[in-house]
Image 1 (cartoon, helix red, strand yellow):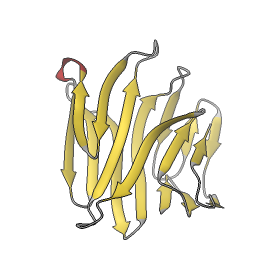
Image 2: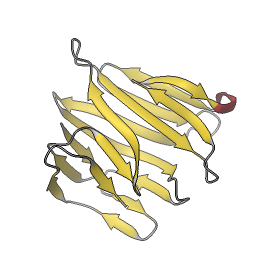
Image 3: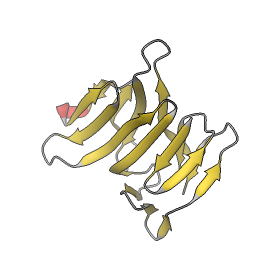
Amino acid sequence: MDLQIGSNLYRNTDGTIEVEGVPLVQVSQHPSTGALLVSFALFDQTGKMLVKMVDSNIMFNERRAYDVTRTPKSVLLKETASGKVLLQLELKAPNVVIFSKGEFPTMKGHTLEVSSKEWKIDKLRTSGVTQDAKGGVVVIG
């Protein structure tokens, strides 16, 4: 699967996005329908789980603070009160997924920000990179 994160393209991935050493996002497609499936766990800066999404369905939602909107080709996870986008992923073509927008804390207490032009964690920024993951994970941070 190819993953585009901001303006960065990662070819031949296994669909896993590892952020600062922790696999936080898993992307796949339903075997029969081809629908986009996203699994994600969000933790606060003390390590407490706030929301857990499995195959694009919310399984755990601390204080009902998060909302998911999904179609067969997209998944959008937001904070309910503020409307802040945590994850926005779209299926561009079979086995090509775009992570175009998002912002959430990493397990190390930093903030990962994804925009159309880059991904960044504090002062570490990457934009316009094409990389072959050779069947492995995408490593950020």
